[in-house]
Length: 93
Image (tube, rainbow, N blue to C red; front, side):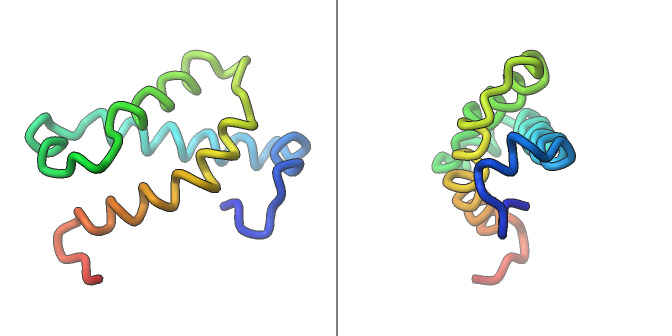
């Protein structure tokens, strides 16, 4: 989603803002549905941080800090995706 984009695009492109925040909402909602045993099986995944990010975006949409959103999607999301892919059944490394 951010490939080929720069931080300033997030300030000027409303469609990009909506798409990225929606992705973070979906990921956070999915994380909130992972059971306790599932979370314990993959302790390296920051489950509560993912859920908290979703909650902050959903309930504080008018005060979203796009500097933080940009950091999440460029620095943290790729690592999270890699960890989730390793956790998926049938994933081949």
